[in-house]
Image (cartoon, rainbow, N blue to C red):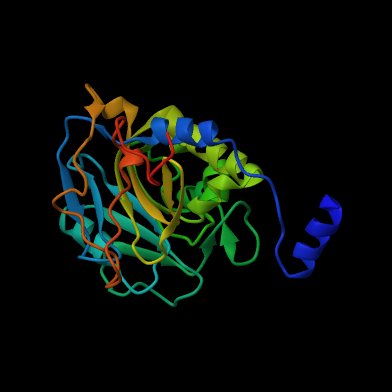
Length: 271
């Protein structure tokens, strides 16, 4: 009977799987809660999509890697005003939205292999600054490919980034057991070297909720390298005063379960 039901659902274009254990999701969210690492956050980039909150800890950084250009280069332009050069890459466009001497553009997608229109983060870095050992910035919005890029990046290179700002996609699939394992492994790798200092949901796509858990589909995460952290305490004030909605859609503030240990249930009636 169960087999017939699953086959019927599959015929409708839906693949049915079990649900991730909710305690596993709770534990991952707990580990991803933003920390106040005693560094003020500043907004770099324009209001709306393309701007990120990052720690005010840019002194000494010379280079930013920024895959996913789309139609805005305000983030990289503001870094250029601070003396930071940016390497940009996106196969879907012919160049950055702004032309500046501090920009170097590759018409490539970032991925897990060096083939065709794809390149890895390691080969990209080796092409331009192979001997550079200083801290770097990574700002990445590549429509779901961020997971394979993080998995493929050697730990030594990953640890070279002082600040990372990434828009993570498909987070609602944390409830799919197979996808959860992949996303959890990706965050595990990042959390080895970084603390989360800010999370901002993209209000374009909504999210999913059950019991005390609410997960936006897309969220911007900002990380700082643990080497730069002297003290930490939970960051309990959201949204940040510098947060701006990505689109003109209904605002979507960060759900309390992502930052408040004492957050109430998302759905009434469930402990």
